[in-house]
Image 1 (cartoon, rainbow, N blue to C red):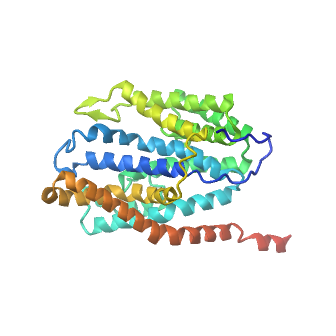
Image 2: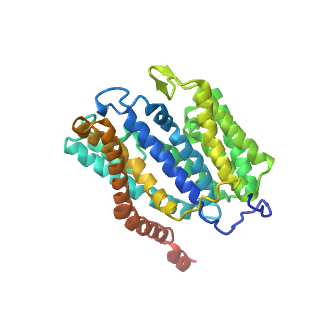
Image 3: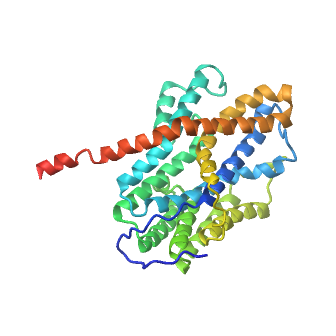
Length: 367
């Protein structure tokens, strides 16, 4: 069922917060689990390539899980920023991202110092840069293979924060999305590195489509948002079909174009169903808890799995090791959520909010 469309104007509109879409928690978790299974099936820790030849025919599509994350992020971040000041939006994002991330960097640094991570021993400067989450922009190596997506998200958040400072409205969203698309094409045409750094071309079509789908969800379907969804889908396909090397190679052969198109199209179709309210019946309360595991699972799974697989697959066998390692990764994610995120996120956000208003009394006295 479409959401009834409120009156559209050019002035910032603050509408009541929509109820939580728990189906997005489920989709985020499924995307994270797809990435986990892709990494676990592909890791060299098994001691042999193609450790699960039949299973990998399915799990290989997990490489596209991050694209699902980006579409969901476009949807959710616009929803989160609507009606908020840039400072309030920044506080919410920093408090959401950094506690589990800091725990991840510290844990990986500890594993490296203990000699348990042998592929790369980070330097002090690499550790410090990774603690900021800005290492990709500083051209410093990520400590963890999954960190590259966080840079894409940070740049997107910065764009949305600037947009929030202007004031987010329906028509301004359309202008924002249209300008983003045009600048993407211009940056590609003139090979403008600085412009591309701001426009994040890899993830942009997914963010754009996600934002447009949120407009459809909130205001009802109309032509302009659908055009942006279609443009995001088309550009995403152009990108993935032109990847060199291709994202998915099975037994040395690139995945067929039809399967690639199908995988990307399925991501868009699922999110279209969310925007149209067709999946609103998926509203079980426990999905909120499942969604809470997604981020720490994504951050911690790779090295946890790599270490355990290397030590367990020989005595236990591959088929017993795989579910056991997935279970351990989920347990670690639960522990990080309960011991790090739950206590630290509200405290960090409260401190950031207080900091935003630290000068208010001084300004009043000066006035």
